[in-house]
Image (cartoon, rainbow, N blue to C red; front, side, top):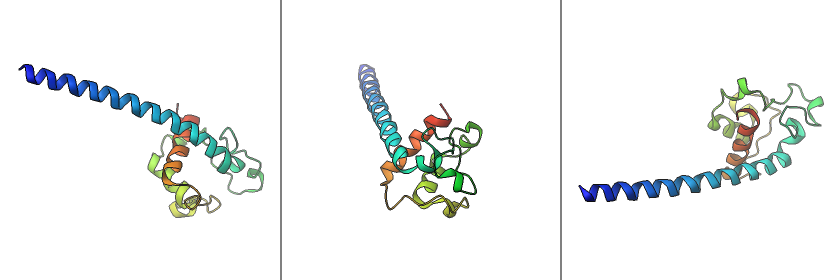
Length: 122
């Protein structure tokens, strides 16, 4: 019985350590995602994500409003990842959304997705 309690205590400590590490990484990812968003996305989607960047006026259809909670909450992180990596046309969306997979690594795309979630869904 004592062995079982020791094992549970060890498991609890390891779980707490893992969770605290994961939370720290997530915060760093969002910060990096914000920088990348400003560099790669804001010209169309705007700094605040409303789809009102300087290039948006010339685009039809207009860029997605990333602050639209109703629409954005329906998208999975995987959906957003695919659009960013492969472009809008690859998933039946606007062909004006370029593929960023040649410019951004997968981890960087995940950072951008994490940042977009802060615009719409938190």
